[in-house]
Image (cartoon, rainbow, N blue to C red; front, side):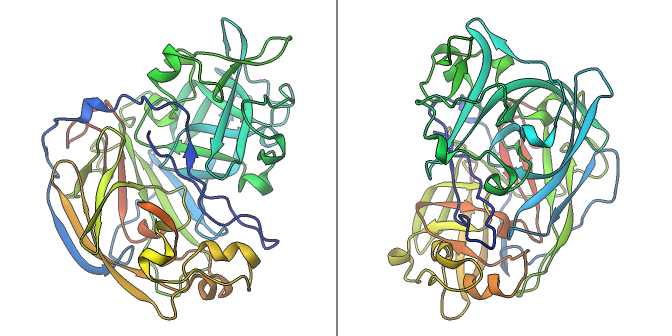
Length: 427
């Protein structure tokens, strides 16, 4: 299964801090087009003695394909503003505080963020279409699938299927979706006004939802009630970047500045659309990490290889191993975030962890990731932090700390780029 990632934004009242990986019930994502691809350009190796996110990078200047992003609360939540319009009209809402997530696919907006915007309802043979998205912590989002023009910078994707979360026209959450009390129905519990999924794939479910009707995913909702349904690819919630008119529709670059060890209260960066399509989005010698059929590469740590590794701006820390394996304790239940801080690592002093990332093409990058005491970092008041981590047994979820000081490329499956047409991450 392709693993999707995001973290729930905490509040000072103690909302969940830990990562909540997307749990998609469909296991077929057709990434096989990448299998057997050669290394292509950019298949080099690199090495750095710097901490993850402490290198140098260039933040793109304002341009037609550049969208501003900010990290100013969370901590480590990357936000942008997305314009959502009734297709073919000037009837639009600018939706701020939308989480930017390279670990998922498709735009999901709270109904409360677009009040009164009459977006056309998407339907299948069985009736109006709705969607349930479940997380590994048993939380979920539920809402209608509607069509919208999606605008960012000067880029436009027309009539994109998006999810409208907590749509009042669909008040009842089906039992096969999950428990209603676990649903994110507002900005406080969701962590923002929506999620912008700009990951490696185009469709959020793929061929598995075309040929079957998974019980907890898409629903046809006639007046008699909602029932699981299959969904054509064109009707599934989709990565809006892939639907831009072109040419900047083959991927993205997420750019955040380098940080000091103490972090910063806020930072501004850039979300650049396109890879190798403009003068400001070339690969520039970046190391290309191609992925396997599950969308993962390998991270090697302490002579062990973890093949379930991915890069995820929707996770607010680097999530890996467990406390007993790593030999580093989790935090206590004191300080700014109360009991939820135990979901992070709190070493007595900052630890430098040497790791190597390797793609299926053999390209690799070695560096040292600094792991600091998360409780102390949170209590400092900094919202942008490049050295926090938390438990996630058996895999490496390279969240937002990995992005600081790096330009992270996300190449969309099937699109052509200077490094070939396979999906990949690069930096």
